[in-house]
Length: 404
Image (cartoon, rainbow, N blue to C red; front, top):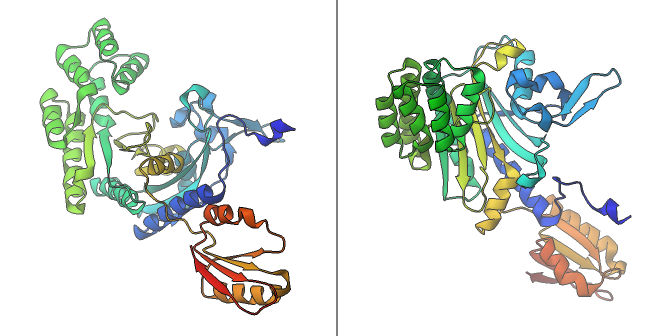
């Protein structure tokens, strides 16, 4: 019986104030997305496996939760929102040429290895901008990210921005196999300087390209310095174009008044292979994980039948809440602000009063003092964030109001 009280590894319960705080973060995300003109969309918790298969560049198959329907079709619990929304955009907006602004709030399911300490069911809030391939579109999502993190109370955070086209431009000139390219990518992403140097030597990469690739793990920090060095390291047209777009992006962030939150990291290459342009991650104190991830995926929708550029990001609500708790930033969730503590004989009066308060938009909970253990009352008040107690004792028509 005791086993039934525990959850499987990688999932957890949220209750009382913690659940309210998490819902508050989700609702703040919805409000932020609304302010930027994004409409919410809901996709199924499980979909066909092919939506997320290796060709899409999503989560590796071994980390997906798979199941079978009665017809024998392979289904998966949603491991990633982006391919699901790409499917929706292609199905319902296939002939729409103007930009689509879509948002979502929900859970994803990834069977992460237990030793990483990551949740296997996690909550996300995010957006997808479909049909806009401009730098202005990139800047809009970065600005929205910054605005949301400010809304929840963060002041010390940083958004790291890279562009996978710089790396891809360099790799075009090497002529190495996809397997070797993936090894190089992994070394750069993990800042493995020695492993990277060894692979470059083994594959006889030219000195100029080796120098540029070898610098990528260290190319992070001040935007102007990083982009200046990136220009000097290569003449590859695609890599130079990536630098130019990053320069333009930084200018946009200056127009938004948010450039102080932006740094560049050309060694950040992303975990999803569908990324085609800029990628970014948000970091703050109190957690070793990123609180936001995003990037451009201009080729993904074409796999579902709609040729359109796109960019999106996801806020990791569980990680964000951990960071806010560590920084002692209050999440202003709303529970029952008023408690009516009444004697049983005054039930009709208590109900009338509660309904009057609710009619004014005031959250109220009722507690029968005849059935309550008053020794637990103070703990109940604290756990439920009660700010006002109205006592209606027996044998009188009086009420006593106490502000907590």
